[in-house]
Length: 306
Image (cartoon, rainbow, N blue to C red; front, side, top):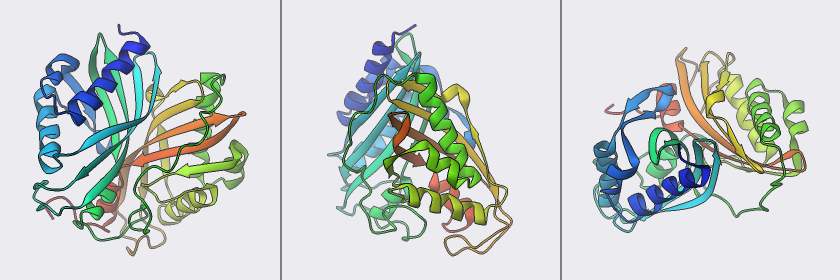
């Protein structure tokens, strides 16, 4: 088994050498041939070294100056959480989108399981809607930061948090906050956060507690049966940081949402939440969600190939 520091080093190398430097051969060293990727809606997708090389090559061809910045690394056991961003200039074709010359900042939160120096399993979310909107390839619909006229990047950092926080306490606070928002329990959510809480959430566009609650209330009004499943085997914490991957389900039988009247469509999407705990409260939350699948299932954006 890899030590926590060795696991962190593997993920850091993959971001810095693989994504940022285009060292494709690194994949054969640190990506398991049997790696499983958990995609939208909790799907399990086989994706070994060759598939990941193809993915990175496509991005680096479209964004030759592109690089991945790492904002956070959190480790517990064999799980490594990473909050990062892709930055680049669109000077080559990207999945059929002609070069635009536009600069993009794309936020992401991921989770990798590292065993014996190799990534064997991965979960990840990226603000693909915001990215495509920056390129002019999607209309400015939905709740995200770009459609709201705000920066798509993570905002400026705050303090490093309380590194004496017990990991179990940090995970309990994160879990409770996720569930309180999904249930529309404003008082429970307010009780879990600090006085200067920041919601760093390009996916849903919220920047503070009022915005986070409003976004959750809007979802619940449109999807009255909204449920969230926090995948407990993906929860991890280190010091004052805690991360979890969640699966959301709901049926659009309620209010109009982003210009779409109720269709009765069942909608499933996934989301990563990372929090910073300080003084026994959630001081800050970072979110990356699969809003592309969400908006496509809702009918606010065309489906792939549609």
